[in-house]
Every structure is written in structure tokens, then in C-alpha cells.
Length: 400
Ligand SMILES: NC(=O)c1ccc[n+]([C@@H]2O[C@H](COP(=O)([O-])OP(=O)(O)OC[C@H]3O[C@@H](n4cnc5c(N)ncnc54)[C@H](O)[C@@H]3O)[C@@H](O)[C@H]2O)c1
Image 1: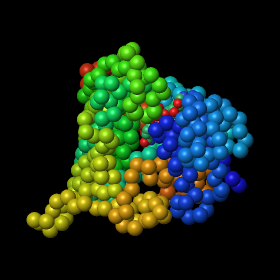
Image 2 (image 1 turned 90 degrees about the vertical axis):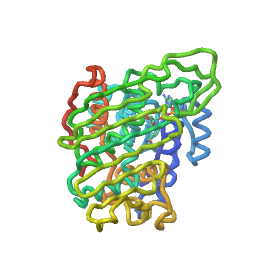
Image 3 (image 1 turned 135 degrees about the vertical axis):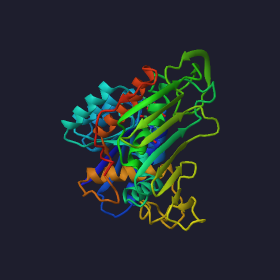
């Protein structure tokens, strides 16, 4: 068996997927079948060609349908703007492909529900890339809490600060379109919300006090294609920003309180997903600014010696042993590694290998719908001047 792979979208995250498929067979046990890097699909032929060449894919396609129609392609990542996910995912699933779709599942709840229905009727598997579940330090904190070592979880505080929109001359792109909640909250808050559930082991029950702010209300139109958060030459024309630069709310996880804040205009913070979790017998902290370590405090330490200690990630923690080329203690891991672990897990499931606790399979489209229902509850709370808004009950696959 050979698994033919394609990535649709050669932008910022698409390159992360392409690199991850290239690395996949070099991670963990050598039990994956041959992986053939077949195509990068992008409407921008220049982006597609450059990514195919850089990451060793055989070709590039300007229309995703060429990938859907190719019988030699079995596993496809969909890494395009959120509002384009549904059409492409449905087309791929109808063609019998296995699909790994980027977060958030879509830009509207209706589309997300339709995608879940398509996944349920599909021959192939449909998974979503909740990439930060694969961070070794985050997964280590989750394991410590799930083991009961810190006792009952009391409260959680998380923020995801980014600064990619600080510059008022940063050009308008798909990221700035859609209503409140589809901006910073859907873009980076979609990560923080599943991490809050993963760490606390509890799901969101309701959201209150939601606030959305658009700090920069219009942006220049780019003169050429924009990739990711990148800068570009701009025209003299301006266009309206339709969604949130900042979002914040409080959450009830069923007896556990939480506060969530996200921003794309937090100067000096390019990519800071951070959280603190306080428990009966101690606490833990993590910041993506130092992605290969976490802070742990144990109240049982000797009196006068309690306090946060820094734990460096190494082969004793999830994903690291066999997951990086030099898997020695303190070697360091980062966001690109998260894609490596994630896409390897996707290919293992496509290959029909058994799931292991060391490499859990990827999250489901139902998880992706739940993730969007959390965002929707925040939107509803914001529209109701901060009143509590319920999140529909769910049992996400990442709470084990
Ligand atoms: N998991 C993560 O850490 C992470 C990080 C960044 C982005 N993302 C997600 O990845 C997705 C893409 O984000 P990005 O930042 O890479 O976007 P991007 O704008 O950098 O790239 C999107 C690419 O899609 C191409 N494209 C547009 N329409 C297309 C079509 N019809 N068919 C094929 N290609 C098309 C564009 O030319 C562009 O190259 C989004 O859903 C985003 O939320 C996830």
C-alpha cells in the first residue's frame, strides 16, 4: 500500500502540513506504508509551484478538483480560508478521500453542521487539525492533571495574544471578513478554547460577559496576493474590517471558572498562547513563548520551598521520544513539530494502524462543530450585552 498525499492551500499553514507529510515516515516506529507526496493545490500557481518544489511534492494543481479526481491521492489536508473549507471538504469526501481540515471547521455553524453530515456519510475519514493538542508541554500538563496529582481543578485563565494586526497598513485579507467572532476569536481563540477543555478535562457549559472590539476598522487593499499574516504592497484603496481584533469572556466549565482573552493587536506578542490552571494541590502554567517547558507548582513540597519550578520537555513527555530526530532531554520543540505529530497521527489512521496512547488519532468533525458552538455562544453573549449563553453539551474526543 502507498498513501498518496496532497495539501490544498500553499499559504502559511499549508506549508506546515507539507513539511509534516514530508517528515511523517521519519517519526516513531517504521510502520507507516510508503507515503508519496503527490500534489500541492493552490489557485495561486506561483505559491503552489514554490511549495511543491520546496517540500518535494511531484506537482502542483491550480484547481482542487484535480486532486479530488486523482485515484493515486488518498489523504488530503485542506488548508485554505475558513469560508472555503466546506466546498472543498465535501468534494474530497464525495470522491472517497481521507481529509484533514484546518481549524476552525468553517466560518458558519450551518456549514460546519453540513460538513459533519458529509463526514458521517463518507467512506474516508474526516479529521480536524487541533494542532496545539500535540504540544508536548501542554499534553504533559494535561496528563499531570488527569492523573489527579494536582487534585481538583479550580480555575483556568488563558489568553492567546498575537500582534499580526497591529500595523494599520497590514492589508485586508479573508481573516478580516465575517461578523464579530470570526476574527481573533475564530482564528486563534479556536485553539485556546479546546486547550481549556483539554487541560481542565471539562467542557464549556456557558459563556458570559463576552466583549468584542475592532480596534482598526479599515485596512488597505493589497496590490498582490497576501500569504498568512504577511505584509504586502498596498493600493490606495481601503476596505472595512468586519470582525474582532480583541475578544474576551468568562466561562463556566461546570463548577470550574475560566477567563479567556484573545487579541491580534497585542504589540510585541507574535504568537503567545498562554494559560494558567489552578488546582487544589498545586498549579501549572504554559506559554508558547517558551514552547518546550512548563511551570509546575506542588503544594505538597516542603514548607518554605513551594513555588513554580520549570520543567524542560524531553523524552519523558508526550510526543518527544521518536518524534524528533535528536530526542534527548531539553532538545526543544516548537509549533512546526506539532504539525509533524498531528499529520503522522492522521496518516497512521488512514493506514489502518491501531491507535496508541502515545499518538492519539486526530480530533473529529464533531469536535470541530463543538469548537464552533463555543465561539457561537461567545457571539451570542456579546450580542446580549454579556448575558450568559449556553454551550450545547458535547463529549469531545480529546477529553479522555
Ligand atoms: N493549526 C494552526 O496552527 C494554523 C495556523 C495558521 C492557519 N491555520 C488555518 O489554516 C487555514 C489557512 O490559513 P493560512 O494562514 O495558511 O492562510 P493563507 O491565506 O496564508 O493561505 C491560504 C492559501 O489558500 C489559497 N487558496 C485560496 N483559494 C483557494 C482555492 N479555492 N483552492 C486552493 N487554494 C486556494 C491561497 O492562494 C493561499 O495560498 C485557515 O483555516 C486557518 O485558520 C491553522
